[in-house]
Amino acid sequence: MYKSFIRPILFLLSPENVHHLIVILLKIGFRIPGIAYIVRKCYAVNNPALNRVFCGLKYKNPVGFAAGFDKNAEVYREFSNFGFSFIEIGTVTPKPQPGNKKPRSFRLPKDKALINRMGFNNQGVDAAAKRLKGRKKQNLIIGGNIGKNTHTPNSDALHDYVYGFSQLYDHVDYFVVNLSCPNIKDLKELQDKENTTEILNNLVAIRSEKGAYKPILLKISPDLKDDQLDDVLEIYRTTKIDGVVATNTTVSRKGLITDQNNVEEIGNGGLSGAPLSQRSTAIIKYLHNREKDLPIMAVGGIMTVEDALEKMEAGAELIQVYTGFIYEGPGFVKRINKALLEKSKSK
Image (cartoon, helix red, strand yellow):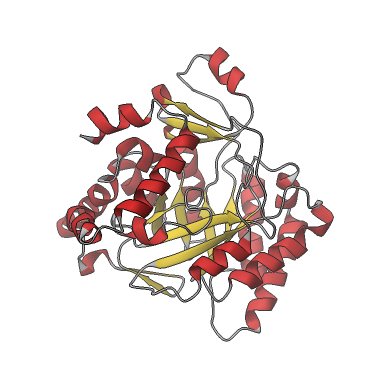
C-alpha cells in the first residue's frame, strides 16, 4: 500500500514539505488514544534474539533512525512506535540557524536516492535539550548528533562542539560528532587528523568529569581515502572515543541513472540512498578488517533487507536507516528485524 498508493502521493510534494507534513501528522495522530498501541502491534518486533549491546548500551534491536529527520527532538517518541530501538536527533548546533537557501532537498527516484544541502537547519541545542528533558526512556536509546554553526569559523569550532556536548549531556544516551557533512562551508577541513583529535580529546576530557558515561562516536565521510581511514583508526585509538558511524552522505555522483543534466541542475549537496550502499559497505569492511574490536554503526545506502544484512556481515553491529525508510515505508524496520531473526535461527 505504501509504495503503490501513499508514496506516489507524497512524492508529488517537495521532500522538505513532506517532512513538515509528516511531523505534523505524527504529532496529531499519536494524540489519538490507542494509535501508538496499534502502530507498535503492526510494526514492532520484540524478541530477545534481537537484543544488542553496543558501547555499553543495551538495544532491543539493531535498527535505528539516522540523524537528519528529527533534528529538533520533536517526534522521537512517535517514531519509536515503528520498531526503532534508537533514534538520533540533530544535527543540532549551539545557536538556531535556518540552513541553506531553498530548495535544498531533491529526490532521484530512478536511483532510489536523495540529494540534500540542508545546512544544519535546526532550532538550536537548547530547544532540543528542553524537549528531551525528563523524558521516559522506555527502552528507547536517544543519540545526539552535534555540529557547529555555519557562521562559526573553524578556528572557533571547538567551542561549538563543547557547548552542544555539554548542553545535551544529561539528555541523550550517546553522542555523534559530525565533522563530515558536505553541506556546511569548510566543515570538511575539520576532518583532518589534528582538528578531529583536538575536538574529540576535549569532549572525552569533559566526559571524564561527568557522573554518567556517554559513548562518543565519530561520523565519517564515505569520500575518505584509505590513508584517511587509517587516520580514523589512529584517532579512535588515541582519543579513546567509543566507535564510528559509517558513513555520512557523499559528494560523488558516479554511476547515477538520473539524467546528468538534471543532476547538474540540482547542484551541490550530499547524496544518500542506493548509490552509496557499496561505498559505505567497503568502508565498514576496511575499518573492521584492520580493527576487529572497533564498534561500528552503519548508515548509508540501506535500502533493502539485503543491504542491512550486508552491512552487519561487513562488521557493523548496529544500523541506521533514513532514505530507505522514505522509499520503503514504515514496514521497513520490521522486515529488517524479521530477516535478522530468520538468520539467527539458521545458525
